[in-house]
Length: 173
Image (cartoon, rainbow, N blue to C red; front, side):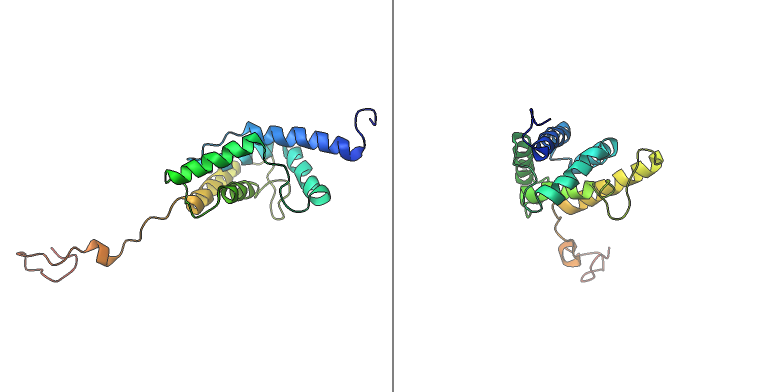
């Protein structure tokens, strides 16, 4: 082993880099469908829990703060897609693209092998998986869809109607 890798850390880095990049790059991002992206992350973690465990180990032992991986071309493309979706009004522009991506990934990991509450298994009933996907989708939609202007009584009422005996009563007639 030491003929190929300088140390156990070197071996870990090689394995981790290869596998984590593969799992991140395999999930395409349509920034106009962050909910679908979250569901795809859920499914990928369900099929490959070992990658989540590797990432957790790297976070705990190797990189306790900051970015776990350097920004790759794949990640840059995702961040640029989120920024473009913000400019087109699909994603709330209040958030930084990096924060949108980090939050969507974190929410998608709710039932992953590193969850401190409940962990999903491939053996769970398919209806449970669908319920979780739906939950993720709704959380992401509600979190990042631009807010619509509030509808108030004042904005709905255009003033008194003339000629129908209901002048001065909002909504009458």
